Image (tube, rainbow, N blue to C red):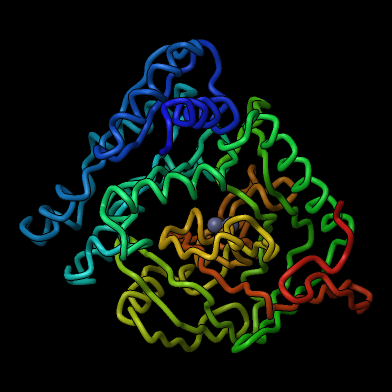
Length: 412
Ligand code: ZN
Ligand code: ZN
């Protein structure tokens, strides 16, 4: 049984290594109502660490579904202004944001994809300013997950609800290393490994990467001045924090006009409550010109039609196949976990911080450097033990970066 002590360790890890909460700082928590017990532990520990004020914004899957089923069409075209103001006020006052994401992957499977697309777009538009605080690391923020019943049963369909929740707790505890005596020290080791990998890639400074695997033959150009990041990040005020728990990736910005070829997904993607699976995208000069999906093609189409930037890439990330998430053999239907099991790329907005000086550039300047902008940022998985990646330098030299899904050079 997952014990109280492990949950306490997880809460402390999220606050110290995750958002790195400072004395006197306010904290905004987005949490599933089903996880109220765990959330209360986090809140208590936050006050113990000196939080000024902690606000919890509860997420209730059942209420979300009721709204999608019954609210009038026009409700989905707007996002509540009070919610934008609430979130922005935490950000502008230097608060930290901790999001606990545990949504049922199939929650909206019977809802008209049009409604979902309209709602996603309205939320993204309304939160443009708030998102800048997050994507430019102006504040410290972190995303974690805890088990909830429907989600756990999606992963372990043959177990009872309680049994599935328990199994998912065990899996998550191992992956985020709270099963270890000193999880905070374990994360220091992990952050150090990711630092070695990103520094190796920054030093090699590739002009482009070539991905090859079943159904995949894709060339991704990298902008001049691109920076590989991974593990611990740093806020504008110089506070180190971990944006994602778990994390196993190093990532950078692809050139929005220099992506060519076809890429096949290797894991299902849970996009805003519906699943897109076994899909492929074909790019020309950075833009998706063709796509197909065995499941969720309509949802994929809506995603690609969100705006101009939704058809271009905003992230390329490398994750070796020996990642503990990959080794768990589970499909989580939750991007936070699945993206850290596998090499992935993202459609939509790029992180400006992945370009030298990028955080201070405006949208036009970012575009001139090949950095994509969009209302969306959606990661999907393209890695497997059959994936190989070559790095091409500006002088044309080709080096092996990944072979059989893992590092081709020594990163220890
Ligand atoms: Zn990523
Ligand atoms: Zn991403």
